[in-house]
Every structure is written in structure tokens, then in C-alpha cells.
Image (tube, rainbow, N blue to C red):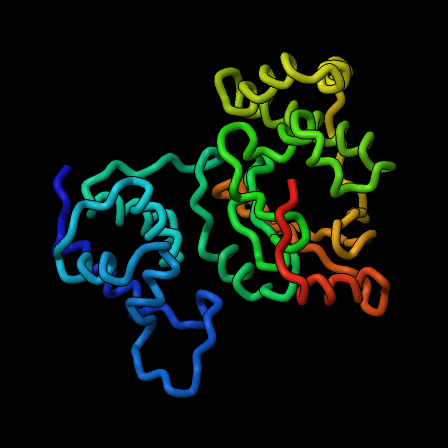
Length: 280
């Protein structure tokens, strides 16, 4: 398929001009005169240079790669239908939809953008972190940086000992059961040949603890009501986790809160000042 430069330019301009700063978590500012977002704002959201983005709107520049197209779709908060249309305009086949897709729907993104002062993240069904708020990064580290099977929190739990350091030791046994149970459920749902089944095979080879728990065939082990963290800077935190599910992509928004007035509440406020930490 060939790139439709005129169609792509018109589509990008329309989407940029239809978005308001509030739609993407940006401040409006008192002197804004632009209808919609500025090109440099969209370029930053898409993780590209302003010049690269501007050339696309002017029907110039190279054909974007699939990775660049996905970044544009996410930066412009496109729906799945709009994302697929963008890929076709670029001359690419649309990416997979559903459980294996990493494209976060605009609804979840709009909510996440409004949670800048709250630890929150969007995760896939195998525990891959797709997006985090700044305070989410400060709480757990940048968990979007992992690649391959290590993108899965459950996989890291059994293969990277440093992953467990962030969680209270008395909760480790339950978390091990929960991750094993969850992986079994997804592997059964998606079937042989799925990523879930592949991760299970890898863990059966690499973790004796996982093998023991897998052999129990336990399912339905949910999260505890309160999550207890041991943060390297602020120490012990007790946080409640609320979740919102996007059924189209099997993505879940997780929001962590502390009881107002509690010690953990004050520690979260301190954490927002300290900033991000690199945590395994």
C-alpha cells in the first residue's frame, strides 16, 4: 500500500485542531489563540520532532514506520477505528486488536491525564505497564521500560528477585499465588500458542516456586484490599487500589490512593516532591 500524503495531512490537521489541551492533560494557559493543539504539542505527545510532524501535515517527509504510526495514534488519542484509518493512510496494515494490542483507548487516556497527582497506571491482561502517571513512576519505578516477557509483572515476580523488594514480605506468598492464578486464567482463555501460554512455559522452566504453584491448578486468586509497599525513599505505604477495565483491549486502569490524613497519605505527598526513582 502506498502512503496517501494528502489524506494523511488532512486527517492529522483535523485531529490536532479538534483536540483541546485539557483532552491530553496539558494546561491551557491565558494567551492561547490556537484552535486545538499546537504542532509542537502534538509532536511532544507523539515523541517526535516538531519538524518531522510538521512535514507530515505538509504532505512531505518519509513514510512513518509502524512504530512511529503507533506513537502518532497514541499521541493524538485516537480510537481503534481512527488508529486503523491512520495506518491505512500511511500505507500500513492496521495492528492487531484485542488482548495483544498496546494501543490505549482515548477514554482511559483522558482519565489517566487527569490523575497527575495520583499514582496510576494502565496495564494489559498479562501485567504489562502501558502508561504511568508521574507519581506512578515515583511509586514503582518506570515499569514501561521492560521488553519481551519481562514486560509482564508476573513474569518479573518469579525471575527478578529485586522486583519483590518493593512489596511487604508478608504479602509475597499471596502475590505469588495471585500471579500464577492470573496467568493460568489468561493462558486458558487465550489458548495454546498465546503469549500467556508461552510465558507459562518459560516460568515452568525457570522457577521452582512457579512450578509448585502451577501444579495446584488454583484460579480466582484476587488482589488483597490493601497493597503494602516498601519504598526505598519513604518507607512503608498502605494503598488502596481501584481498577477500571476497558473491555475492547483488555486494558485496566489501576489507581492507588491512601486514606486522607493517614501516614501513607502524607508519604504520598512527600513522594510527589521527591520525584521518580529507578526501581526494579
